[in-house]
Image 1: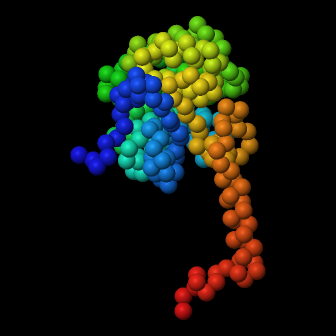
Image 2: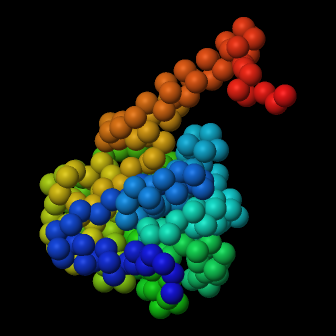
Length: 265
Ligand code: KIV
């Protein structure tokens, strides 16, 4: 029996029932995952956003299954309490049900993480059901699908109410334990949140969702370049790091580092 019980997918449903808002942040490394866990965030996402914020790619498409498993295993070792969800990279769930289960099972077996997330519409219902039947909890990512950026022609707010409601309801009926809503107009997110029994987690989907997720690099002020309007910046770590590194550089150049206290006799 572990000292601190891990958050489970059932706990998230109970939180929705109690009206207790769920918090979720991304993490890709040990120290960040440990800090988020100790701060009491209930859910950690090893997101395919790592392709952009860690690997420096222009979109989420290049990250591979082996790479996300590498990071998820590190995050899994750091976390004692939070539920950890791992993104299935493109196209690890597009090549048939057998291959999808094989790929998702690798994530669960190799990482101490408890669930996978897939970008899906109603067309992926069969895949969700197959994963759930294999005992693998699924978070359905509905709305803006960054993995379909070339098909969508850019990152745009999603306003097709009928399609979004259908995608979310189909995902719930197929067995998803939660629906993440990305870049969905707030009034549609409200309707979906009220209709579903499972919790909705929003990113750019308004305050009414049952929980909120952000990319940790965006909220800590560590992202280079474009940051979406929905990402509130809670810290300026870029400024903190640049200041520390500049002072180190100057101290070394001036002979002020190392001092006596940092040297051995
Ligand atoms: O990969 C990611 O970071 C995501 C966001 C929606 C949080 O999926």
